Image (cartoon, rainbow, N blue to C red):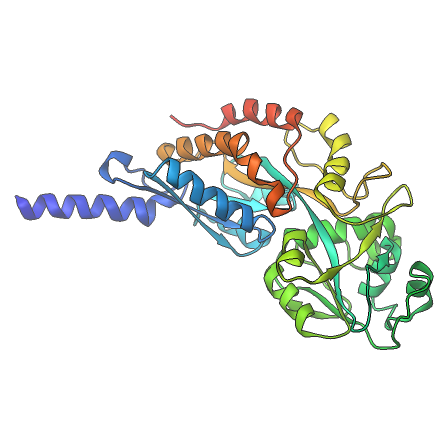
Length: 352
């Protein structure tokens, strides 16, 4: 009997820690284990704050451990669709095609706001460079090849730009950061929209790829004459120079929490019911133009209701107390009106 009881306990623990993390997996009563383990995967963009949140939440609720793999938005959507994780994370909202491919309705919940910035490594340049959307598009189309190109020189009067080649760096994996960047470029450059388009993974005409925000930041840091795009916190962490970008009002704005908040203002007033919205190239003199919400993805009716209840409770915490830690990491907290809408929307997630 002692052996049988030991086997029963072992099986219960393994089910929670390994198999119970999938929405379609066999639900196991959480009482069978002291710790409920929930697995998620997706965007690298929010990884720094998600790591902080999951650790803090575990301190408050030791019975719940949330594990997160920072593999890119495309990977997060695939793993959620394949039900190999309980929740996904993305910086580019799922397309209608992706939603239809999922085994059940998927809900989007914005968690924070962030900025994608053009980073560069140009030896001898002091101060911030300026970029317009059109110039960034032409660099990534391979039309602008030198740092002293007249189009760049015009934006940066008084800066002695070198006659060196531009090494273009982009993401190699499916990425919400890419989605945000190309969404902006497609809005300001018809040529870019036609040739490259908007998706989490695109066919780049030129450049070398790095995996994750970490990979792109690392390549740019190591490669003189390079340019790339990363989430703001990765530029700050690696102390890589990043430029100001011209917004829809014609102003050159450097990314900051305040500038991202300004970009979100209009979106917050016109938020769609499913929270899938783009805020790139937002109006307003102080708005940073390459900004976005980042979303956590949950099945509306997952099989494992214990994990569902735990994630709903986590999101309620993240939308309130968790927002207080956003600014120190370079993210902008959600507008109060969006938080209110989300708290109501969480009731759609089945927890029993």
